[in-house]
Image (cartoon, rainbow, N blue to C red; front, side, top):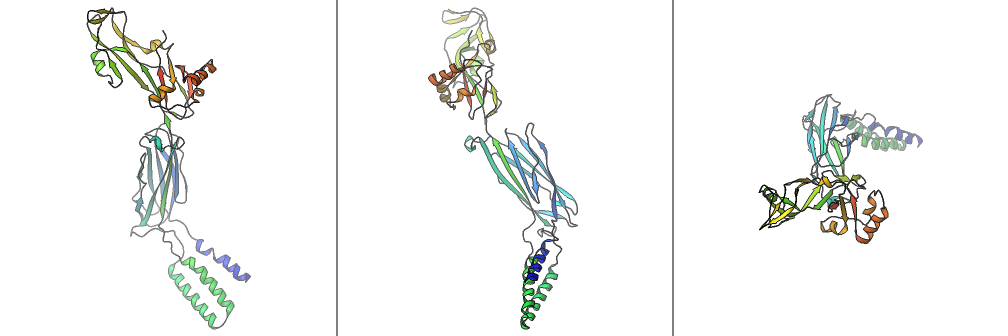
Length: 384
């Protein structure tokens, strides 16, 4: 019995000793990416390639190169390519080789792009994730699927099996139980040696993409000012109201007094935990450098109407972070938002105003930590 067990252990490895892949991956690397994107080289094992990439901004991309080596003297072609499923937000551009010649290499390129803004509802805990896969299946020039190499020959094993069957039958007729036992063991071991691989050789590309949600900072101010007719016509009438009163400067140019909301959205996107500096508003508007005086049915500037910048008030400019205004304008706040700010003095005063009255005032250049929601600041009248 010990001899039978030893024979079983030795022979069970025979089917696997000489197996090797006809095609192998030589290298996988990142060849190009958008500025500021931190992307690592993919990893691979056998014919499975794994890509992990974290995007931040729409338009970010990464291009990867995969080098495939043909280890045989036969040319192989791409028989079928199962490309990536379509994504709502991520674009996968797959450029595969048509064939790989004998003992040569071919290259696959994969470009992954953060293509469109992700719907906020698709973020989970501030993060969007998706996984996609593609497969490159190979065949020889005759269209036969490519399978792993083995050094065995089917004809040899057919003869071997027939000989074993005859040997077992003879042992049974001669009533030699021990010989028949050895023959049955050899027959069973021959079964895996005879199994032909039916799974075609495939190169698997597996991609995991994640996108961290970004948030915006918006500044809004009530800005009553005088506008020329051209400037008035360019205003958004949904947020502007203009008086019917006629205003003129000393040159006879007519102006319109309009009450309008000036909205400025910081073009930079911010991520939870980042430090943000409250900006000063930059907006030029018309103002009379003298006094307005009523003359008959019109109002005349006793001087000149000229451009004045909000920057002139920068030393005293401050914003109101107000619960009611935030909600009215469709933004979100958190009761702990007051703790995001780095107040230079009298911190308890700001906290008290927030808790008791639902607002606090913030000077421009104040720093705060970006929360997991957009921020809206309302500009108050500048202190002069």
